[in-house]
Amino acid sequence: MALRQIREEGDEFLRKKSREVEIDDITSEKIQSLIDDMLETMYNYKGVGLAAVQVGMLKRVIVIDVEDEKGPYVLINPQIIKTKGEKECDEGCLSFPNQFGKVVRPTEVIVEFYDRNAKKVKLKAKDLLAQAICHECDHLEGILFVDKVLAGTLEYVTPEE
Ligand code: NI
Image (tube, rainbow, N blue to C red; front, side):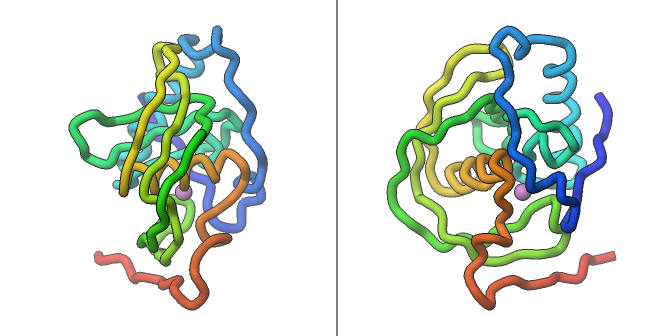
């Protein structure tokens, strides 16, 4: 496993749309090591989620860990098929270090995806997991949380030494 460099604010690559992974490629060395590296990178920077585009790969692959009993989650070619509710959430992004703001997200989503074993999964997610899935799926379309942040709520927090 290896840490990968995270693309940050101002990098136009983050605006690109990611491409679907071929089902037969999911278990390939290339995709499996991408997943391992994304998990390592997410944990290293203490993120809740990471999309492949953030480490320079235009693949529809996301990793999420909300510290629940089922995670970490690896979602390949995710499709949100249903959303329910609305909630103002505090949000940040590893591509926008030290910036946080409020974003409206669904309280519940149903998402379909392939897991890292190329098994098709349908997952019902709530609260922080639903929020993270929406945030990461946005990345796959080149959409960033700052596009959706509620006016006047974006804050810059000075990191602690
Ligand atoms: Ni993000």
